[in-house]
Image (cartoon, rainbow, N blue to C red; front, side, top):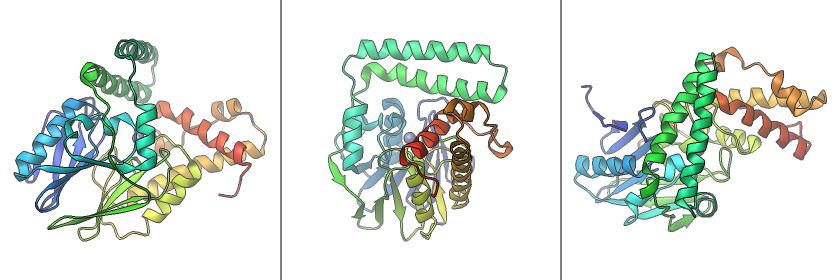
Length: 320
Ligand SMILES: [Zn+2]
């Protein structure tokens, strides 16, 4: 086994430098997104809690057994379930997020009726299964199968899932000074979700990005204009290693790729809007450029086109 790498059922743990680890999700195993473990000196900080309590438990176990220290903080990058459904494993720690993310977790992730939730998920999975069986498109098929597997893992854990909310809230920046290491949390707004937090280690020049930076993925867009401006600001930071919310450890080049992707589909939406194409005409006439054809989550492209088109229409903007 390669040095500094630990394989688990849910993720591969990479040592980025002494005391800084990236948990890179294994597809379809119940982690779904990436996480980070930071040794602050006397105690640990974990960035994101993965998609299921089972994966979150493994994350905490690895963190504490690798370092012999206890987790003191958990950071939630944003409210999406694949990043926060492991929170309950960290309920004895200080869970940190922005005010907006805490509110979104409260509103969007609440489970009132477990039976109904289960039925809804089963229905959705059945629908996915039908789509998988009926498509000949190998890229779409692979993407749907992955979604099916990830959601099945969430369903498996659903009866034990508890929504645990963040308790330490901030707005734009929070610095945590450990005895040996400092981490900075930044929220530059909401591009992928209403509020996106990333974590920067200034001395090590490592950044854990949540879903504002992902690799080869049609990542859902919340606000295209803010998404672009956040990425452009991130590019100004002195970062040598990036841990994306989904995909492998990389560098700022990932940021450029995403900026190009967002710029291109925004440009196309602007053209469609200017030529007075309807949303349906825009979507049906949109051919995914070759460079993005192998990207994961291809079934999400329609949603992204819709978001951008609707955003432009609402804002009557063509200048960003
Ligand atoms: Zn997300």
